[in-house]
Image 1 (cartoon, one colour):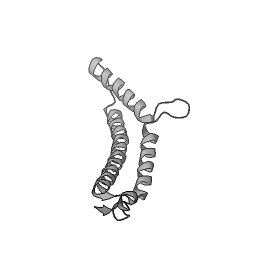
Image 2 (cartoon, rainbow, N blue to C red):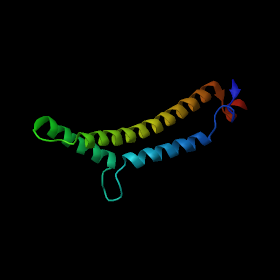
Image 3 (cartoon, rainbow, N blue to C red):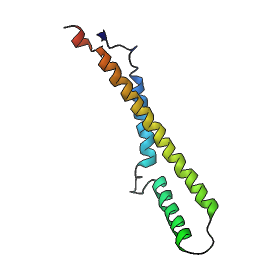
Image 4 (cartoon, rainbow, N blue to C red):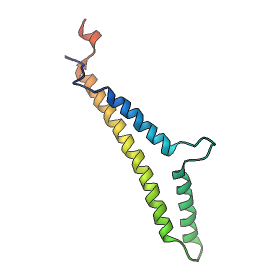
Length: 108
């Protein structure tokens, strides 16, 4: 079994994974004053608008709904891309660890 080296995995990728997690927290976490994230507020607002459009007659702002959909989708896509990066790096590291040996095992 070969030795685990920098050629097997770049440890700096884990720091980038932490940055990606922080980006996800920015989108998903409650704000300082226990205010829910904007994406949650937008999703609830969209629900109210759709509920009213489906259950009550009247004029509804379709353009505003589409704008909210785009905003929410952008937030969710950002979280998705960050999560994919983290999972990919964890899988890459795990694979490298399975096919190699750490220094202490190699020296035995």
